[in-house]
Length: 103
Length: 519
Image (cartoon, rainbow over all chains, first blue to last red; front, side, top):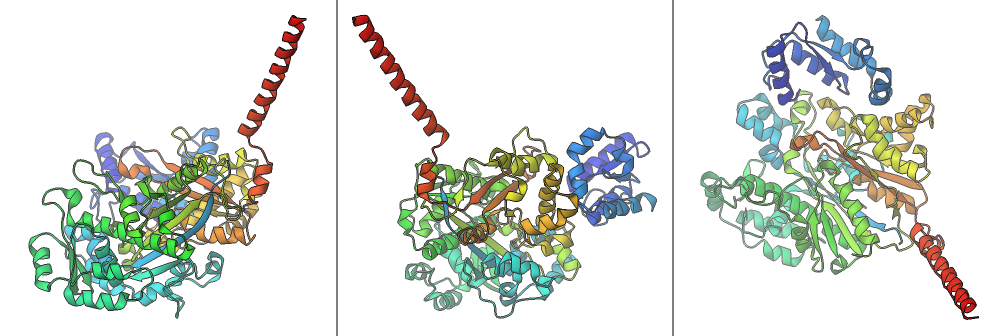
């Protein structure tokens, strides 16, 4: 996860706390999405960014997950996301991201 | 006005493992932050030999010895299935080893900033004698070399960047200013490497196409480097500096930037300059990016792969007046991602791929081959970035599904048929659309394909000036010959004919009215 984004997530968590804050991911690949989910929950596993050793405990969802999809206007979702649903390995991404919410 | 043509394209790879270790930013940053890291200790065990780099199947495709279709059938991982006995010389390009490249950097140095050791210089002179791109004049430019203690002193006391062959110091690059970071030794090294690699491929293009260097009117350089000083950081002009080494005495030029989309922007500009009649022969080229060497090295080392990002890339394409034979650039069907296009993948693909096709009354399947970001997948997959060309082909196919032009079940087949595996090094602008132009030109001439689309995309956000995405595309098509094109009057021509007819009619009416008044 990009250093700048790690810092932004950390700042937002400090400002709003971690109870009413979730992170929505748009990663194109399972491993990278899982890495991002892990970074915002348990801390940066690569120990490269501001979240190294900082377990924020934030829950991350991928934009493909029903919990997020159902909150979005279907027309907007169709225009913005549906094409990528055809292209990417949706199940693998969701399974990977979910692991870090449950773990 | 007749469409311009692609007269030829040539490609270059330079195997630079020592620059990877010394100057790739992943390694330089690690050296600053974690000088004792296991990555820096282990990277040496993952360096490829020149022979292995030459025998690496995607590199053989890049220089034209293996076709992309053949690569798709070859067993992977390709780094374990080398094509032994491969040649560094290809139909469409060449692979240059690091020692020879140091000689090219010396020849490209206009300010006495590149120093090569005496004995090493003698070795290079012997090795390069008879090289068809390296002239006698170049050999004399190498001079007699410098004593090793002079080079050691420059590295030790004057912040010069070392040039190594393994553990041995064989030269260095001096800084060009003591304070200005834009002229630091590291930047001069990057810029000289970009210049030298582009100069080699320019010379190769000129030689292989059998054209006179003097016939080139204009050069557009499209790398992602920036040359200038503290008062004009990106002042330029790589293009002219490269043209000088290429012997293009009648050319001027400029640098066009657009991140990875730079080459596609450059080619569209070149097409416009030629079609408008401003220039007859325009070369679009780009050299290699030292900073990107070993960019994903940490993942490669952690996963037991060779550090595959050990190649600098280069390309040169000649755009010329319509000769009735070579493939044309359809300048009336240019795809472009506008400021207001939207940044979702769908919006991007619509703007770059679908819009120009719809304008020309074409369907997504009417393009036989799409050339997207052609990064070698086994470089990017271990780093978590996925198979970039494959993802692009699937997106194009998904767009066709959304438009009702393709059944969803055929998505993967479409991606396979209209795509190809990535075969270019992850050098930013280098893999972006242009690597396929050489094959596309040949396949269009052989009637193997009718149309190809070249796509360039750029991640502008990296410069922190905008979050906008960018991309442009153009279509290459078989040339139907000059005569046929003349038979079909264009819009402007029709307007002119109509205007002439109306003028004639008005003259007749006036004449008749005059006659009548006179009666």
